[in-house]
Image 1 (tube, rainbow, N blue to C red):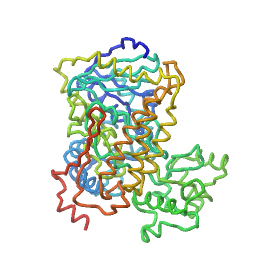
Image 2: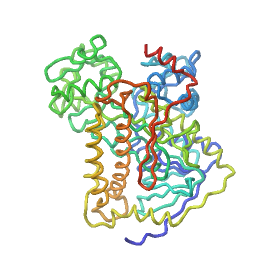
Image 3: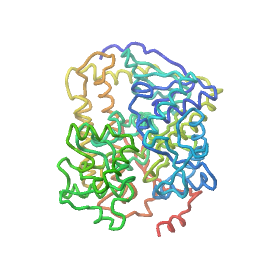
Image 4: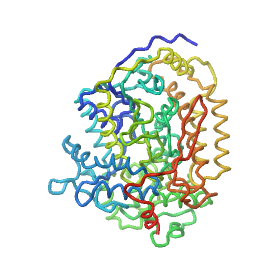
Length: 581
């Protein structure tokens, strides 16, 4: 083992790990209360791989009477198959209108009607509450333009190209984090009174995904290793209409082609197969239903040459298609498809398949976004607390992240105002730095990309749709080989410490293995089908499984339990039965 130099140390009130929409909003509101804030990102601030910068056309917020946070909660609980934490939902969704007004104040170009926020009707909502960008599907780009500027304006310290390897603890209290300044290649200790995880989801643990491959559940693994509880990891959302061909467009979402212009889907036999599953609604069903139908068609041998099905809008008049292209402002994309790959949207079908889009599992949190570890918060996809239930309603990823950022940022700033800076254990820092440095020390072994590819294949095979006990156990067996044989041998062939992506990849592979284990174990324990979790061997939703699956880890030993829901303040079980019919 090479000698680890004494790390640089930064001291702050609030450390925020992850700089997407949730982290940015938390930094803004913590600074507004006077807290010193350090915010870290693996890339460039506002230009990193955060899924929120790629978000689509709208988010849901209860803005106008007679709509209310209570009504909003009830709609979300129905969509979540009644597994949601209703108190947490109310705590965060009650800030929905505040988010909209803040964004407008900061110069966001949201759609207005007579000078007031314009809200459209969205599937599953009792009221019109879909706030959108003036140009349609560019909301993530708009947030990327506005939020980082507000963080900088308030003077938060931003650490770019910074990879956090582990949380630092003092007993049951989190006292900051250890990370690598990738620009210098050196370790840095960030000593904080409060620490917040905002690293996004784990869609990068699947082969086909709609977001950046760097979204591997870093925060989930950081929390687990530090002793935090993680929950609901079995619920993974897939976007049904993500392109699988050509490769350069893989993961590009065509959902608006089915939702807005009524596209049709066909299998290799030329059948409009959605008629078989939903004779009346056909393609015009929830994303979850579309995904399952596509999965079945491909699994049963009726897929396209590249493992999907065909989505086409050629049943529409050409001038209507042109109007759609103009409205979505994606003409260059369709031009590239036609010119370089011979695919003309006016005539041809595009090959699509469900891609991992959003992950409901995350750290257990309370109504203030606090984990059970003192000083540790979590927001966005890194946090669960039961906010999503068994399925996330469309249009809620952004509003969750932004409102949770408000709640957590304010509470963290208030809680540390009169607190002393906790002590960091130098022995713990040294040990964690040595572990993180192992891939640089080894001169041979297994490459990070090999481990990542295997983990992605395991989850895409065993923890997709059609889960079974045999399949999940087979996935766990394969993962056990990865954990015991491959991970100890992972190494970086590049030995330079500055901007060494292979070194980071080796550390990400470790986190992916932790995430995959939690997903598989949770899916194995839940012996029912509910929302995003489908078991072929337990195809029915079982009222006895109105429970959260919660995990923790001690010395590498994963402990898992099922905990029943006990509080229903806004939608009672009797009302749930009525909704179910």
